[in-house]
Length: 90
Image (cartoon, rainbow, N blue to C red; front, side):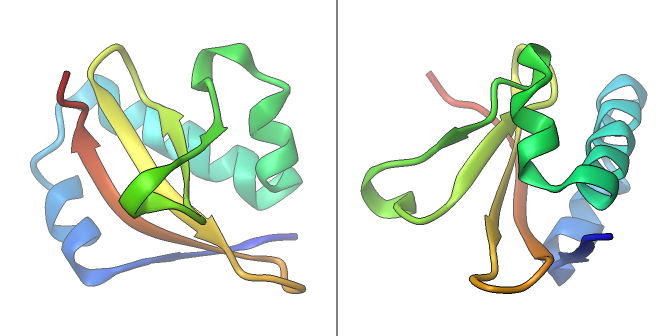
């Protein structure tokens, strides 16, 4: 079983998320807890991908058309660190 750690700013953002995005985030967390990031890649709706540039080393999953969760996986451990839940800017 995987462990998810949410940084303090993420907890504040979660209180202000739209309810549909919050439900999707809770589903995202449950999948990660049970199967890890590999489980996310098997569900196309999350469109889980690695990031480039200043976010190199992190991953992103879609929580809807606008919202993203940014996270990284600790090497050699079953731990996922959520660092940001934010609207995607185009």
